[in-house]
Image (cartoon, rainbow, N blue to C red; front, side):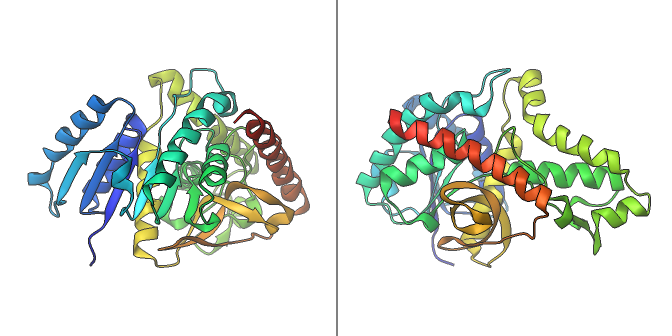
Length: 315
C-alpha cells in the first residue's frame, strides 16, 4: 500500500472528529492540520499523537502545517468556517463562509495540489461550488459531503423503527443539505423489500414516513440547541467518504456532486448518490423519481441555484 497523506483545513470540532475517526480506521500514514489559529492546530496534533502508541495500526506522523503541505497530499478535507448558531439556517451562513472559502481556495491552488478535495463547511453545497470555481479544479476531484449525514441519519431512524441493523437499510436523502432536502421514498428498501412493502406488512406506519422526514430535517437544529454544534456524525461521514475514495472500489454513496444534466439540472453541486473512486466522484447515480419526488427535488435545486448565484456576486 502506498503512503497516504491527508491534510485537514479547519481544526474545530468537525475537523477534529474527522481526524479521530480517520486515525482509528488507519486511513492514512501522514496527517497535516491547518488552522487560522496555529496554536489550535499544534495542540490538536500533539493530542492526536498521544493516541499513536495505543492504536492497532499507528500512523507515521501528524503535525500542524501550512498550505505548502498540500502539494503532495492525496486528499484535502476542508471543515473551516464559522459554526452554525442556534436557530440559524445553514444558508444564513453563506456570505461569511464564502469569503473564508475563497481565501482557502486560493492558497490550496497556489500550493500545486493535484488530489481530491472534500468540503464539509456549511452551507456545504454553496461552499463546494465556491471552492471549485476559485480553484478551477476538475469537477470530479471536488466534492461536498452533500446529504450523506442526512442519509446516515435516515438509515438509523428507519432501522430503529423496523428493528434491523442500519446497514440493512438502503435509503438516501437528496438535494440541499438543509431544510429543502427530500427523501425519494420510492427508492428506499429494507433488505430486499421496498419501504411501501414494509408499510403493507405493518412493520412501519405510513404516517411515520413523514415524521421521519421531519425528524431528519430537524435533527441538526435539535443537536445544536442541546450542545451548540454537531460534529461526531459528520466526522464519521467524512471518514466514510475518504475511505471509499482511497480504496477506489466504486461504491455508491451520497455526496455533493456537480450536476451536468442529471435529474434535469446542471451547473451546481448538490447531494445525490454517486459512484466514488480514487479520482473523486466518478458518476452520478440517477434514481427513478416519481413525479412528486421530482417536484420536491426541483424545489431544492432552485434554492441552491438561487443562493449560489447571489453568492458569486459577493465574492
